[in-house]
Image 1 (cartoon, rainbow, N blue to C red):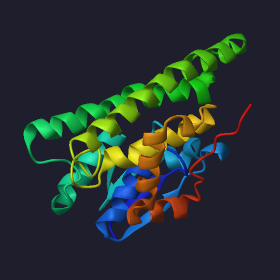
Image 2: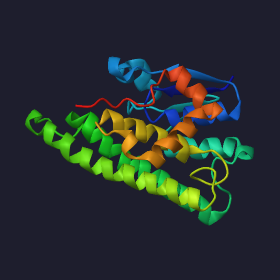
Image 3: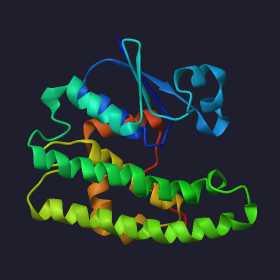
Image 4: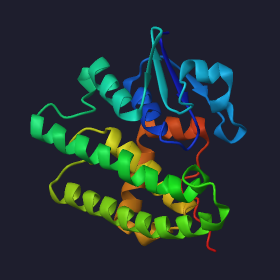
Length: 219
């Protein structure tokens, strides 16, 4: 076994976790307990000095950052077509992945960990409130993406094959519940996420991470 994935339950590492499950290739899942600070341990920092997940190790080579890992898994297992082969279709998938990773994801981080952005506790609640409003609109954009994919006859967000956009959409929707946003308010997105969760690869990752899909609790 040469592949090893460092992941944290419920984090964005769910995306490569699901892709690895889809490959059917043997890999070693290594859980990193973020709530216990294991990402800051000397042992983990020796693997990834930034103290982040996911990390993919393939035959001793360490790969960090989710977009790089997705691209690597696509090239490592080309027959699965995690990314489209046609240039424009691939660009469309990559631009959506980049938006998920560099816009939607950090917006949630402002809600979940405002201390990362200011050491003034007096503004933490305002950061949470403001970014929750932004996040709600982004879930609306994600629902619109689902609608466009369905209108075009695509089985999944990236086309006919299950891929990283689908797994990331589940993660981002689930985070909405943590941010106090009811996923039932986005019925088309919620129905799609449940279909993603039923995909065998995603279901195996969900089982290993022991994830509850809807974590929304009314205030």
